[in-house]
Length: 290
Image (cartoon, rainbow, N blue to C red; front, side, top):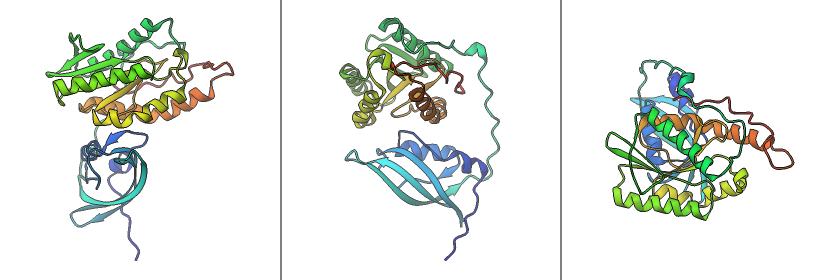
């Protein structure tokens, strides 16, 4: 039997693939709905999804059928790849949304020319300024809190942030502190661990950094703790290595920067010289839309 594959609306065809992400199934379902595709993955809502691609699309009475290729992490922490056929409604007549204007130069923080920092204090200040600048651009304002390194609020909801310069035992302790704060303050707030995107100059190799994130991904996901990595050269580029925050504008920002990470990482590895230092930034020109 031959099945005719019909094209979906252009926006769905080009924007529903999710690559190099770390979102829960619940987040994926919400994201697809926001893009006009009302289907649900047949997986537990707390499972983490790494990649999702739409392989086939066909119209059916009252909606659309899609064949999905999904890479996810199961309850045992195993990486699983599987195919799923899902059916649902599609919002075919959505008005074309205008492209978001690029950020004004006056709204961007200045770039850096070096990978490392003079000391830990300079690194902490750089990370805090970058993340604070991002959140303030989304409507957050700074507030006082003795529990964390950085705290901001938006519409009565807080964003609790701890800074970890190195992915090590101390970083995990800071993540545990955020988990305890979540138990204390509840799930309506955001919790994040802020790190440098590249920690080689601070004594942690990229390999060990990635192993730390992989080893602790289940703890971070269960406690809804995001790991946010600030680019060493461009403070306007921040990547989400774990769950994404709930506010829509922030989620859109991290879904924009997420696909850039693979390219930035590859350039970084290629441009390291024999002494283990980055020969040049090479990717500071990328600026995420805010």
